[in-house]
Image (cartoon, one colour):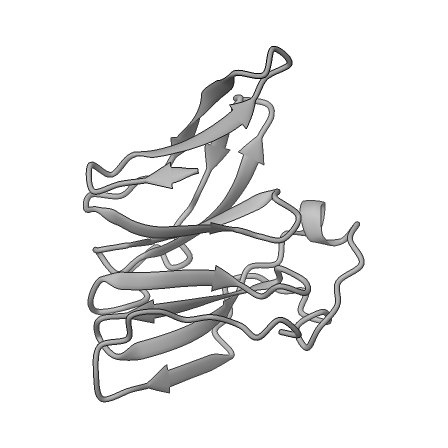
Length: 152
């Protein structure tokens, strides 16, 4: 997967002939996409943008492209550029985002179609809601990156 300052995101998949082919991503972002990550199963992606929005989405087979809605539709989750986004490694039910506004947020991103079938582990395995914000940490400085420990 690649994301860039031209607002584009492309998911590259390997075809039967071994070549890489691009898949389209539908994201309504007006500014640069700065960071992206797959969940551990490879069926969801999260993207952080310079507008402060965090997007989490999945592949939609009906229209043959990835759909990434913003986690908050009325206003951005952060007041400055999102510098880092990460799924928790055990379940993929939450996403952490870090920003130049000094804020780290953990938000839920449970998808009943994808996550109900898996066997999640870690401290966020019981999360079964979407678009809630159970944790927020305000730092006094710009946050460059965020990462979960291997155990979540």
